Image (cartoon, rainbow, N blue to C red; front, side, top):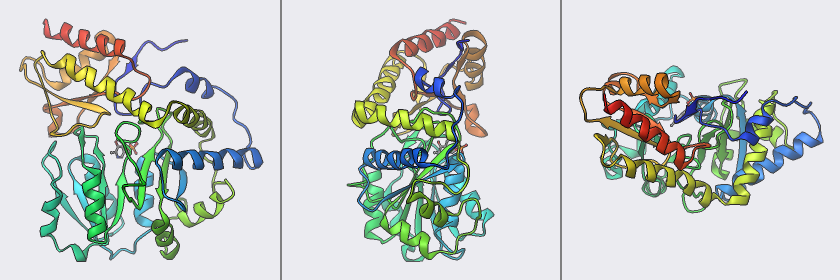
Length: 359
Ligand SMILES: *Cc1c(COP(=O)(O)O)cnc(C)c1O
C-alpha cells in the first residue's frame, strides 16, 4: 500500500521507491566475503564522494547521528582535554551535553539562534587551552549553515583538532575534504542520504586514526579501535543495520552515477524554488545564511503560530513539516528539501500554506 503522507522534514525524509523496496527484503547473513566486499566498496565510494585524502577511513556505526557524535569524543580524548564547542542551537548544545555527561572538559561559544559564526570572535579566547573544535556545519535546529572554509583554515592556523557534524549538510551543501581538512566528519543515514534512520558514519583522516589508536577509549560498543581493525577487511564488530547497508550501497552508486554536484544541486534547486515562491507570502527566512537542506520560516502574519501551520498542514494535507522545540518553537518552523521531493511537491506545499492563510 502506498503511503499518502509526504515528509518535508529535516530527517527522516522521503525515501525513493528503489530504497523502500530494499527495506522490505529478507536480510542476508553477513559474516562472509559478499558482505565484506560490499562494506569495502561502500567505504571506497563514501570517501570518493567527499574527496577524502588518502589514508582516510570510514567507520559505519549502527546508531543515529548522536551515537557518532558521542563516539568521536570518547574515542579521541582524555577527559581533561578541553573542547571548544560552537553552540548555535540544540545540536551544538548536544555536543556540550555529551561532554558534560562524560566529564569531558569543554567551553561553549554560544551564538544567537540563526546568526552566522564570525570566526574572528574565537580569536579572543585562549586558543592554546583547547584540543579540539566541535561544530555542526549546518545547525539544523535553526537552518543556519556555517562557513567550512573559514572553520578549517582557523583550525589549521591554531592547530586545533576538528570534528564537524555534517549530519544536516551532507549532500545538501558542498563538502570537499581535499580542500577542507577535517579530522572527523560525522554523517547519518536518514538526512541527505535519504535512507532509514539507524546508521551513522565517521570519516577519519590520518591524524584522527592516530588519535584514536593512541587514546584509551571509553565505550565497549563504540570502540572505534576495534571498528577500524575489523573494517580493514570489511567487517563490523557487531551486527549492523544490514538492511540500511543494502540501501546505502544502492544509494551511493546512484550518487556516483549522477555526480555529487548534481545530487546537491537537486536539493539546492528545491530550496531556491521554495524560497522564491515564498517571496510574496508573509514569512521571513530565519537564519542569516541558510543551508540548502531546510528553510526555517518565521511567520509574519500573527493570526497563525508556527504550530498552527505544522498542525494544520498535517491534518488537512498529510504534510509533515518540522516544529521547533522550546522557545524558538513559538517563532519558527522548518521545511525540509532533502529526499525524494519534486518541484510539484513544493507547489503542493505552497498551495497548502496559501490555503491556511485564506483563513
Ligand atoms: C539529525 C542531526 C543529528 C543527530 O540526531 P539523531 O536524533 O541522533 O538522528 C545531529 N546533528 C545534526 C546537525 C542533525 O541535524
